Length: 253
Image (cartoon, rainbow, N blue to C red):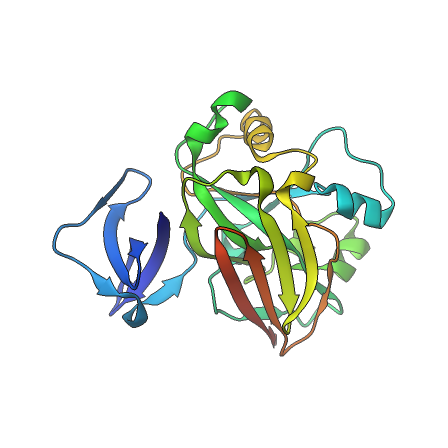
């Protein structure tokens, strides 16, 4: 099932995508029953980011091939950082290259979307707390990350977290192909089978630190091949079974 968030004539709503039709639902975190008597053509609605997280919990250095690329040892525990909800933007929306940065990078990632409140969840129970999965791009001002010695400023600019196009339910996250295309050229390509800490372990680990709320997202890390973007570039994250998330880079003030 594909769940999206849409805008139409001043209204914002969640909906289930069925072919070229959108069936609105009141709250996908409570029930996936369509609202009786309402439907829209997919072509007539605006597609938004599929959820509005209270926080995005991100995992650094979580692909074996990325660690090998950087010549770094594998971490013993997940390395976590946060992106604010104000960084979220949707499919087709511009990503703003901030004036204070001189190097902005793409990072293709599988995002986990939580379906219900999770606190101290065991790994074997984690799947019960997940609504589904979507594509994410962890845009990063790399020069500011190096300058600051920590990651908050570099990761937190508005529009630095594209999500979408849809939340897809019922997927096995264990072997999803993750790719990134820059102006049509593939720059990243790997599989979630390369994850050092797999999805369910991450959900359990993070939920023993902080409460995860419905709609919160976990970004599971990026594979090898991270690189820079420039204004005018088109960046596309493609994940098997989920879809394609495309955004254009624009200059900031």
